[in-house]
Amino acid sequence: MRSANCTPVSHPTLPPTHQHHMWDAWDMAAELCLSQLPSLVEDPNAEFQPSTFFTEQLTAFEVWLDHGSEHKKPPEQLPIILQ
Image (cartoon, rainbow, N blue to C red):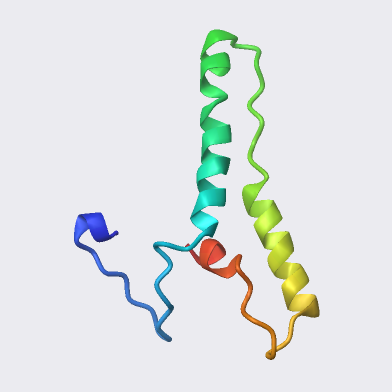
């Protein structure tokens, strides 16, 4: 968004997430999906393997909701899920 000179707004205000370390996990998940493209183009019978990234992040968030408390730090998955 910053590269397009856009500033998203939320109420209540969310902390900055553009340098959150979870982006590294997202980059890896995207890379795993994109790495399948050559074989998918080469072989019409090849089957795309969808990423489990969001399922894993939602599961981790669900575990935090079930076992977290206001005294623990917020879940790391939340910024990615909200994005």
